Amino acid sequence: MIKTDILIIGAGPTGLFAVFEAGLLQLKCHLIDALPQAGGQCSEIYPKKPIYDIPGFPEVLAGELVDNLMEQIKPFEPGFTLGERADHIEKLPDGSFVVTTNKGTKHNAPVVAIAGGLGSFEPRKPLLKNIGEYEDKGVSYIIKDPEIYRNKKVLLAGGGDSALDWCIYLADIAAEVTLVHRRNEFRGALDSVEKVQALKDTGKIKLMTPAEVIALEGEDQLEALVVRTGSTEEVRIVVDHFIPLFGLSPKLGPIADWGLEIEKNAIKVDTFDYQTNVPGIYAIGDVNTYPGKLKLILCGFHEATLMCQSAYQRIFPEKRYVMKYTTVGGVHGFDGSKKEAPKAVVKKIE
Image 1 (cartoon, helix red, strand yellow):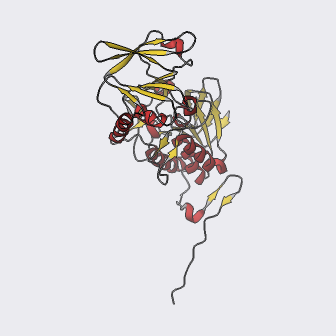
Image 2 (cartoon, helix red, strand yellow):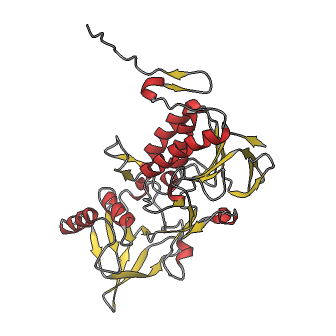
Image 3 (cartoon, helix red, strand yellow):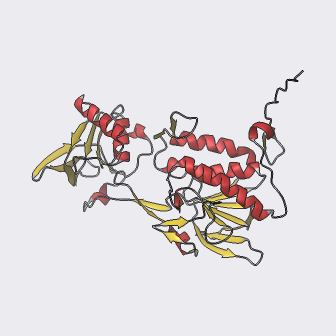
């Protein structure tokens, strides 16, 4: 049995930052994640994708953000159960919880924080009868390492932010980039749409709208695609890689059966402290919902901070916690180490 103060389900950015906020309160954390490494979607789906709305970082790669968060929480020595899915939860007579994974690993904590992002997810695949034959043989649904596509012929399909962003990014890497979308209008950010149009105008990419991929060709490896443009015309395009980016289909998985109040595949919480309808179980980040909810990493950071304050009061109801700014108190690790805050300069008034 693994015992901890706060058991965090989900090791994405929100879950990792919760470790830091809990550490400032001298609360120990352990994280469970079904993925084989920490970082959530930032590590698994788009580690090389730039993020622009993290305070203090004009631009940071998703994988870089995860590396920085891991460095930030190092003094607090969190535990990890990776490659295992949180399946079952049980409340003990003392009010604490036991969470068991699909591999039978048991964890005990007085507080559970669900930071599972979108939950378990699967890519939405185009309805092409033989697409499964080419998976990992030229067909991919996510981009982990853009260098794979250097000097290759790549065709992307989709009309959202992901398709647009990767089209822009790969324009400087791939030998040839083609973007196919079944409508003339795109769902992504206007700035991205304008960049794609500019790349098309300068000949750096090919843009085909309205159009859709209707067939895949190749022996042991993907060799070409057939694209239908307009209503009837069919064009054969030689490619090395086909990347359909139609989004992800999120599912809460076993957590949906934990007795929590669910609304539209998300967990309802009280914005006072992001606690669910079950006292002692919190939900932070993209997995939760409340009026005015924004699915942004920085919002998850805010929710994690308030959750930890509430968790401290739940674990130590007899203690009164007085918040100290890190610029004043520094950061104390569990091993006794301390990052000193700079000494204040006091000038005497005469």
